[in-house]
Every structure is written in C-alpha cells, then in structure tokens.
Length: 499
Length: 103
Image 1: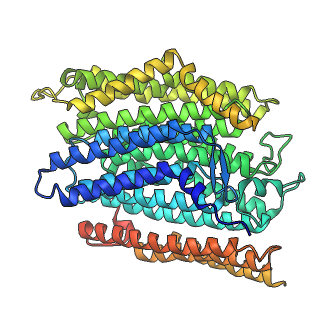
Image 2: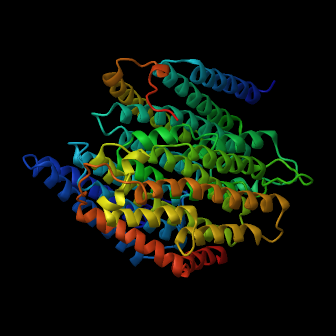
Image 3: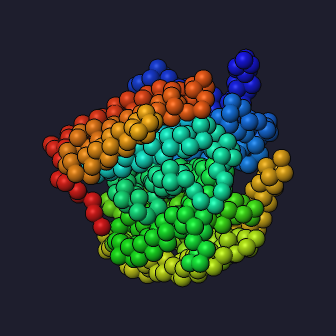
C-alpha cells in the first residue's frame, strides 16, 4: 500500500486553506477587536480582510499552475480548473463589495465567513472528478447558501425563502445521492472516468437510466432548471441582496461546470439521441427536455412579473436553458462557449442585483413602480442597469450577445450537427427575442416613467458605483473584444484535452 | 431473489416512502423526516453495492456512507434552525400557511 500523499495534498490545497484561514481571521477580528465598534466599521474591516484573503488566493493560484490528479480523481487540478477558481474568487469579491453599506444584519463576520466558506466549497466542487467529493462540496455549498438566505432575521420573507430553499434542496440532494449510489453500484467506483469506462454498448442498463434521471434531478436543482425551479423565485425575492446575487452568480458557474463534468466525463458513452429517428435513451434526451422547458417557461412567466427580483429569477431559468444547450452539444468548442456564457451571465446578474439592492434601500421595494424614474434619481446606477439588462437580453455589442452567439454556433458546429440541436437553437433564438420584452419593461420604468413627485436624488455609495462601473465596463470590453476571455478559456481547454 | 436485489428493493421502498412523505406532509418537520429517509435509502444502496460488489476490500462504499451520515446530520441541524426561525415569524410550521410569496 502506498503511503498517503499528505505533502502533495497540502500543496494542492493551499488556495482553499488560505480562504478558510481568512474566514477564521474575519471571525476572530470581529470577536476580539471590534466588539465595541459601530456596525459600518465592522463591515468595512471585515470586507477588507475578505478581499485581502481572496486576492492572496488568486495570486497563489495564478502563481503556481498545477497539473494533478490525486487519490482516484478526488483532486483534479489543471489550467482550466484554476481559471474557473479565479473567476469564482472574483465573483466572491464583487459579492463582498456589494455587502458594504448593507444594514440587514448585526452579525457581520458570520455573514462574510459563510460567503468565504461557500467559496471554498465551490473551489472544491470544480476541482474534483469523484462522486464523493462532488456530493460533499455540493452539500457544503448548499448548507452555506441556506443560511445566507435566512440571514435577514427581521424579515419573514427571508426565513420563508430559506425554508423553501432547504426543503427543495434537501429533497434534490437525496435524489442526487441515490443516483450516485446507483452509479457506484453500476461501476464499483466513484471516479467519473472509471464510471465512463464501464459504460459500453448501445443499450443501456436500466439501472444506469434511473441513475441518470436522478442525477439530473439533483443537479438540475442547483442550476435552477425547470421543472426543479420552484425555489428560485422565492429565494431571489426573499434573500438579502448580496446572498441572492451570490446564489445567482458564483454557485451557478460552479454548478454548470460540475453538471458538464458529470454528464460529459462521467456518462460518456451514455449520451443517447434526442432526434425523432435516432432516439436512444441517455442523458441527452432528458437534458433536452429540461432545456426546452426552462427556456419556454422561464421566458413566458417572466413577462408577467412585476417584481424585478422575481423577473431576474425567471430569466435565470431561461438562461439556464440556453446554457444547457452548451452541455447538450458537448464538443471541443462548446465548453469554452459555455464557460464564457456562464461567466458573463454571472457577472451581469451580480451587477443587476446590486442595483436592485440600491433601489430597495432607498424606495423600500423592488417592483417596477419602485424603479420609476430611477434615471433622474441615480443616473450612474441607471446607466449601468441599462447595460446589464441589454447584455442579458443579448444586444450587440455587449458580452451577452457574444455569449449567445458562441454558444449557439458551438452547438451548430458539432461534428455531426443533429436536427435536434438545430431546433433547440432555433427555439433559443426565438425565446431570447421574447426576453427582450421584459427587460425593456424594466428599462422603460427606469428611463421613461416619471419619478414620484417627492423623489429625492439617491446617494449611491462610492463602492457600489465602482462595482457597477467595473462590471458595465467589462461587459462592453468583453463584447467588443470577446477573444480576451475566450482565448484564455480556449487555451486552457486545449491544454487539458491534449494531455 | 439474491441478497443484493432484496436490499435494492428495500432501499427503493424506503426512498419511495420518504418521497411520498415529502410530497404529502404539510408540516416542515415531517418533510425533514421524509428527506432523512430518502438519504438513508441511498446509504443502504451504497452498503449493499459495497458488500455484494466485485471489490469489497476497497472500502469506497462504506466511506461514502460515513460521510453522507455526517452530511445528513449537518443538514438536519441547519433545517431545524431554519424551521425555528420561520416559527418565530409565523407561529406555525405548516408549509401551506407559509406562502407570503407567490407569482
């Protein structure tokens, strides 16, 4: 028996260790040095500490490019994984910045520590190809997110949203575990590549089909795909704004990557076919149904929403539907396109939640009426929201347009483009035309509708304007020169594929 | 019937009972119990596949179960905390009366 590689494990996990230590440092600083300080001071020092920790982690990840596959796929590190980890850390930093000037809780350090621990679990989630660690990281992430949702103790909606999130999440975790147990029974291994190597032949084992459906139920919940979406509108509406932004951004990117890994690496050989004449059971037909439902229901229900948070939730389902097309295509080009889409979407929705939080803090609600005439009251935030929403709708030259363009063209340029993928792309394009309507309704409220007579200009905290400006600038930049990000991702995907 | 298939039947039954509880119960605590049953059904699967599988000397299945029991305990702790926090606001744990958000 080979000795357990403790030293190697330690060196691979230094980024996560730094983040955990940061979380502990935030807790300790608040408990020992800042007991008597005012809440704003405690928030600022906690935020600064968290940002320092994230920066150190990013620096360490950038500084030491690693290639490793340790302990039966438990820890898999390669350039692509490291890039996704850096993106997740950047999203965490933006979320933490949105927390500045929040006033919903007195428990500042606990909130920040939970965000950092959730980030640690996302970093584990993307750096593993083993069912055990996928399950553990996913549960650690979910448990942190439930608590972050419930953090506004004075609001009944926050508690209600967290309870619904928990009940749906717990059930889907049980489905996921049951599916994983069947995969283990099928292949006698928890390593995704071993599982794939035991799948052969055109007719699938019935056990495997049940496992596929159950795993899709479990992971479909995390990406908020219809019909596993019931928690999303309530959580987006009830959770404190930074938590909702975090759930909508970082955890989506991680969940889509792990869904891609489980489907494309773990269930390679069990794709099946979704077209009429070549129908075969597998994960492609199941995911195709989920994608169609997500796109249609998400976009159509979003039309009749008056709460902007709920609107963002339903539009998140629609975007999940588009991103599932990237997984369905599973070709060389589709992974960078999927990641480009997921990253730009996550950044955009983070900014949109920041603006929603600003409006809520100043007008007391998030319905379209509360947004009326925002352009006269907070011009910078309004202009940034204009860019975010147009990018979500996919208007060129913003990043959202190129995300959709690359995703759909990757789906169409698969080695043998099936008829099924083509009609999915047609449906997606038609549905993104529908989505323009409800995004423009929000913009109409902001720019056209008159503000209420007693409306005073909103004083935006400098940090918020900085975050909005950064995100808006990066959306325009990535829209005009999409290759900046895409080349980076494509290069890493090629490196991983060539090994 | 081989021992493996009878174990799998039992775990499928447990899972169904748990899921039926989740769908039909209206009390949040009883739904939580249903979720725990579903998780334990999956644990039983792991043990059965490990015991009757081709490589019982590799302790993968048992290890998975030990971790998942720990996860289930953490989940119950968080879940009960959330139920207490909703009880403070609404004075009830009946989920059909906890529906202030809809649309």
